[in-house]
Length: 456
Ligand code: FAD
Ligand code: MLT
Ligand code: ZN
Image (cartoon, rainbow, N blue to C red; front, side, top):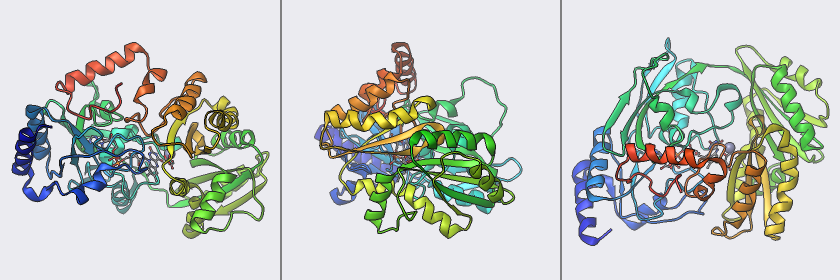
């Protein structure tokens, strides 16, 4: 940005939100300029922190006039480099917009501003005797705006769907500066294009989401978790498929491998789950209004190939079991900046994929390590590769190319961001990408919202 335009933009931003909410100090900016993995780092002239939708609209209008690009940012837990200013954009942080209100128990809905954390929404729903069913490891920091922008999936998708399935109303400022607001929460409402669905997964390229009306579900106060050990991925995948048909209270089915569990234990000084290690583990959880333990135990007893099992129905032991799974992300982070490739594999290809992919990675980068874990119930595997330079995206090409060849998705739940936009064509046809570009042009005619994200 040229110096004169720079100072007029900063002065304009300060007029809109007050000088205390425009961060220009280099030390304070740093946390907004680098992503969670530390693989993507850029810089910004300013981080602006609006408090109202009117302020967000005024910021967008100012940036349009000044032809300055914006990166919307929530909790900055995104894993594809989509929420950080890699090309000198202004960061619009939603961190001051955290109100949660209009909790309607009868309609089973609540209204939330985009900067509220997922954990805060889940707590508000629980306090009302209900649940917000989306959940993920970054719950304490990730925001509802970020969840909507990435269409976050998480650990309970097999039962309740992802973020898109929960959003019944939205308030947002489009790239053209207009505010769209449809928050009545009418569940049946076929009056044209469904903007909440369009904005779910739009990664900050079409609009800045400022609030949403979310669907809530039954609160299940009884919960049981089991860690099951298997000799092979084939046996584990077959067991998950059988469990899904055997019990309809299954909320989560997560797969980890021995190497990942050892890494977690070493990184966080945890005891291993069983007296002897097993090649593959699946963590399953069932939840119901009455105790689901007998149903889960009965279904597990009928499975083939279970070599060991630990069952927990109290909070503290359940948390211990979940740590073997949820601490993977942090444990892998201790090894350096990982390439995080979040993919969906067709169910019948899962076992072969998990067997093949480490070999393909080693062929390209003999010193690299491949870490595999993820939401096996919906075919979503997180392929993390360490020991490769952060900007060596040849490794991404190897993994994503193979995923596309076998009919998978190159982005299951994290989005395309900047990390994967080169490969969007592997999954989307020319006509689809042109349709997306047309939508982008219509809602963001000056191309100021996240111009380096999603579309190649
Ligand atoms: P940010 O990182 O701030 O932004 C992400 C993207 O959304 C960027 O493109 C940004 O520009 C855009 N954006 C943010 N806010 C807005 C807004 N208000 N309006 C428009 N655009 C916006 N993800 C899953 O799906 N499932 C998981 O199980 C999961 N587990 C995770 C576990 C850990 C430990 C970590 C670190 C991350 C995990 N993630 C997971 C990824 C991440 O938490 C999600 O992508 C989350 O939805 C991002 O929310 P955020 O508020 O941090 O968004
Ligand atoms: C997870 O499921 O733990 C996440 O999506 C984060 C990751 O991929 O590391
Ligand atoms: Zn995940």
